[in-house]
Length: 166
Image (tube, rainbow, N blue to C red; front, side, top):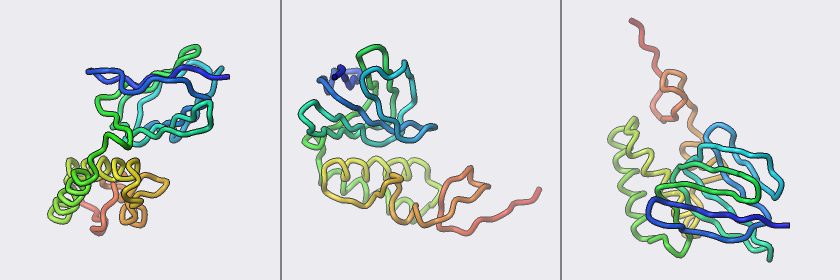
């Protein structure tokens, strides 16, 4: 039994096909798998990949830079401003973006834009099969081994946690 999957951006439908299962990562719920007959669902997607398991058993992996996933009846819709399959990713550009982001984070560990750019670059490289620097958590090895500080809203940093008193 299969269902229809579409990845839609403002410009076009970037992926459309039949699937036996779709696996996506939501911001609050972690990884979630959808199979035919799944209850209706709407969720906010994290910067991560969406895996489409086709009826022939093959897997298509698409980098998704946030968005929404909706399950309704026999259709899964992924809405995202950016979605890229492995063959659409420019590996050299992703490596350059990763390097630029890492340099910016060395200069300012709290640079949210650079941190976001690093996560997106690592995702692109992982989906393209060019680099496996991100583990199952979607964070770089440094981010996975660095504790989160409560005063930073749970963000990770290699800088020591500081308590600021009023």
